[in-house]
Picture (cartoon, rainbow, N blue to C red):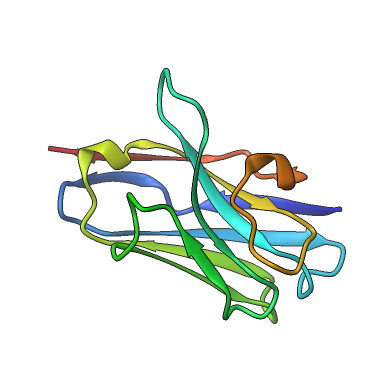
Amino acid sequence: QVQLVESGGGLVQAGGSLRLSCAASGRTFSNIGLGWFRQAPGKEREFVAAVGWNGGDLKYADSVNGRFTISRDNARKTVLLQMNSLKPEDTAVYYCAASYQVRPRVSSADFKSWGQGTQVTVSS
């Protein structure tokens, strides 16, 4: 399986931007789907964005569509989440995950490997 490590979280004011990065190690990276999820205090983990094996098949949650962009670099074994126009309701721990399926998935049950998470806090 692949091991995942997120970075790039932090504190930002509403309207600002952050870029999360997830570095992978272990098994072959280029033929698996990847995604980002988040979990706010007292809430269930929710889907944010996902990308298929070739980077061209993307899915987004309605709440972030148009503000967040997911991308992947198979040569560097990384997946990125560019977050713009951040809102206080985007505050959460963000997790990178691998689904081992070539098409992007949106259910957390389809993801078998998870990173440790990185905190994103958006102040109003």
